[in-house]
Image (cartoon, rainbow, N blue to C red; front, side, top):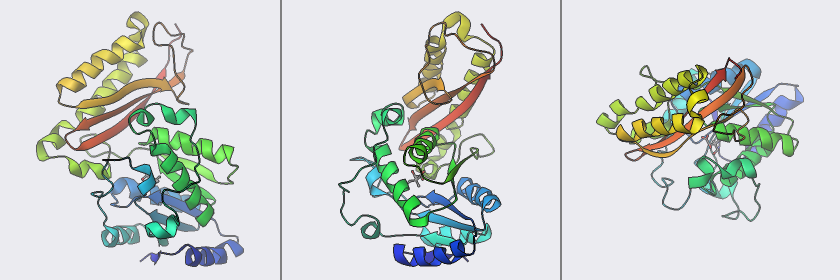
Length: 294
Ligand code: PAF
């Protein structure tokens, strides 16, 4: 069973012992309610470190007003059991007071321009909240490596930027999306789906695959990216989703010219979607490499 720490000082003292023995420490930050996607992050962490710390903290600063902070599932006992099966060593499960002596914290780690787009449009303070909590976790655990899922593509890009700009000596590993057999990306929020919504949900991933094929095959050359995306938005909406965004960006999340874009051979793009289905806001993304130059 992993050992649970609720206090920063106790966790720090414990980890110091491993550091003194030159052992590598990995951090897997989570908000709990763990599913196979999280467990995969732990398995990857074990390949890169001697000791794996999983943080479980439903971080209030990354939830906006009216979002699901209060109802977000808190399942610590179950989570710890699951973590035991994949060999996590420590769980850090602090209280809100332990993490935030003052709430909201007067200090912020601004996530910058990259955070203003995509999820940042509808959740304007979200990435500032992610930035501060991840910075605190990095300072508390001082890991050699930290693992984040690629499902939250924008979050991963922002964390890489944070590590670069604040000179954290931490390797960031992006772990591939883990999917259910029908293609739905695993997420703690999938449990908000009703049975019939759960049947509909995989359409999002199917649409991304279809779009990736169209773009990979060069359909955007005649129509421009925006028209191809718009047809896709209409299909997703007809299936019952309310789209937050469906966009195509460079892999670094910079904008690309939509109409008759000049695309170089083997250039990689990412198609990103966020869409509501009932109470669940689903996120997914798909990389696409354009093979033929225009
Ligand atoms: O991806 C998440 O679960 C959260 O945003 C994170 C990185 C644990 C920060 O609270």
